Image 1: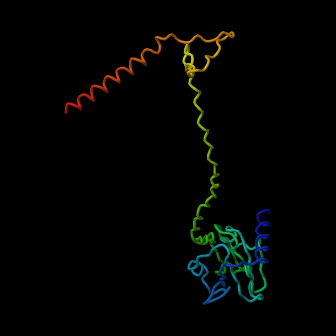
Image 2: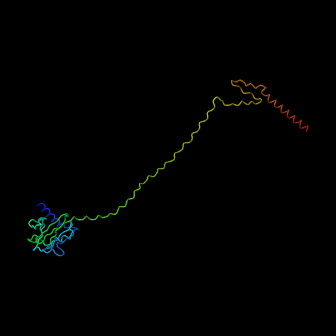
Image 3: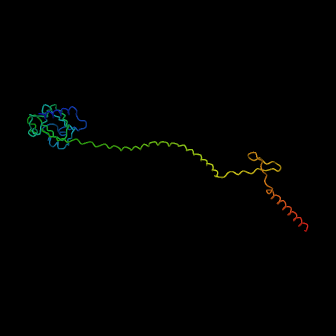
Length: 228
């Protein structure tokens, strides 16, 4: 009972929603319809039913109906336990699920045994081909701005250190020139108020000897000039 309720619910929902992309097949077309003249085994063998397709049963409601049944009831033509019943004469039965076989018979006594029975194998819907997407262009790397170099002012040079003054030699006193003595002048007083003692006469002797030598040389030169 649970299986039958689920199947009825599936058929009802699919009938309301319909299919957006499946094929629609009129049972028995184009040579016939839902009747006693068509060989439905031969008709179904030439069609590849897929999930999303639908079956359309066209018939006279006064003469026929459509019952969806189990495989066992289909094989034995038992109409007392239908899974779904269609009686409008223009019934659309969706096939929403793949991988299953659906079974239909006519419920009028003697018609299923006369050939009004149909088994439809429904394959899974083929997956749509993937849409090729163009490759995305690689984004160029973003160049990070380099910081501007900082100008470093030149370092001021140190002035050269002045060389220290050379030290004076040890133990040497600066030379002091002797005092000049002017003839006729008084000698300066020595330290302590005492008058300076004049140098001895021998100190002036060299000056007198020099004068005599000069006079002798002058006389000799004069004599030579006379003889010539």
